[in-house]
Amino acid sequence: MPKEKPPTIRESIGLLHELCCKRFDVLEQKLAHIDDRCGKIEQELGALRETGGGGAMNFMNIENKIDHLNQNVKPLSSPLNEHLQTHLQVCNEDVYSILGQKYTMYQFVSRCMCDHVDLFKTEQGICVLYAFPFQKNTIYMWNHDKQSWDKMNQVTMKSIFELVQRKLIALYNSLRLQNDEGLLAFDLIECGMYLYEDGFEKKYNDFKKMIFQGLC
Image (cartoon, rainbow, N blue to C red; front, side):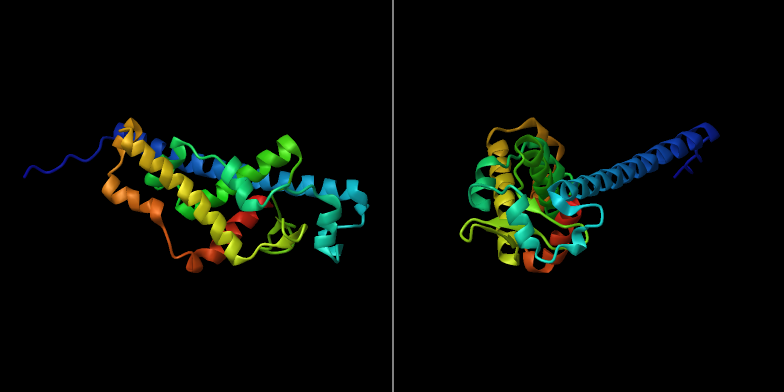
């Protein structure tokens, strides 16, 4: 067999330039995420001051966080899962992002939930989920039965994950029936399995951490 020619200097420079561009894109995304998280923390600190916290108060000084949330944070008017079933939307690009392994199912659901929380807080002043930045990996939800904020447990978190997963799978099946052109880019026998991730109990702590970090 003829020996492959080594790349020319011009080709090597081109490859190096392409690699550098990709690395800079990744770095830019990470910096943007850090900047976004810092902005959210500043907003939460501002909210506490507005509700009587004063300059010396911080999240760690709130002895009863549930009482604080009940008095100061506007909750949902319906059960969490009912709200998400009605209002949380997924689109074709979301399905493609899972099939193409841009995100794992757990990464996608956590991002989707945090984006949904931001949307409702910005547009309607309603808090779907809440987290205090310095209370590690603790997430609060509105307990409609108790009519009070409450810490989210593993059972509720699993039901949220499965709800979003079902929405994605239903959309995926619909796209297949429609012979959607966007699916042509994927080997559905191999890639379709990424939508059906299970084993939630093993992934629970990582999933909770991803949502916590997204909220904070």
